[in-house]
Length: 115
Length: 117
Image 1 (tube, rainbow over the protein chains, first blue to last red):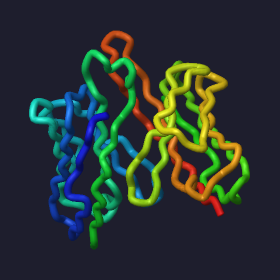
Image 2 (spheres, one colour; image 1 turned 30 degrees about the vertical axis):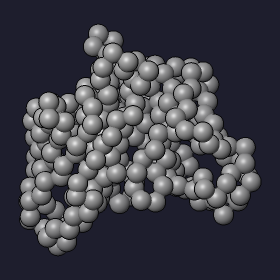
Image 3 (cartoon, rainbow over the protein chains, first blue to last red; image 1 turned 90 degrees about the horizontal axis):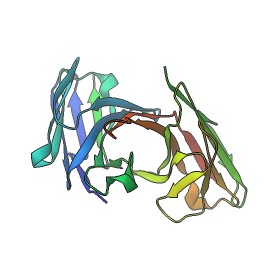
Image 4 (tube, rainbow over the protein chains, first blue to last red; image 1 turned 90 degrees about the vertical axis):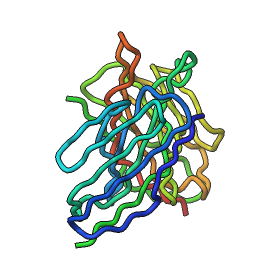
């Protein structure tokens, strides 16, 4: 399978600070998604971003597919941003049919934002 | 709009008892369906995925099985639970764009927290 590494594993911030989360992957992908898991366990899809840059409010993401990494930016962090952020990818390539729709997850970044 | 329902939210079961977790999707047809498990330590492990009725692929050998009796229904089962089956189980769905083959709409249910005692 494809390897997905996220860094840092843990991040502690004070409210208002900015942060950057990184996701490295080991193979070509045609699907990359960022998820936020809240303290109650619900996984929310933040971005579908196989390449390029997207922004949604205080969050933005950039994927450089040729260099096999993606970044998630959180600006002016709030306590409600706390939780685990996951990066997940779907492999591309001629043998993709056997793994169609299968996402490979990183181990996540645990973000804690203090008031 | 599409919604995904998963129940129960929490479950405490004795070792050796059977298990049945259910997941249903509304608002779409022929979705890809997935069961993930999240043990302590955060990682999500794909257990099963299904591209159609009766079509189940298993990612890892284990004490669990999955079935898809209807297009939008996915069931995770066990005949005899083990302590190591404890964890947070998440169901998810996605669709495949016919023209491009790209995956979209990857959405998770609210999860079932299973404790085997």
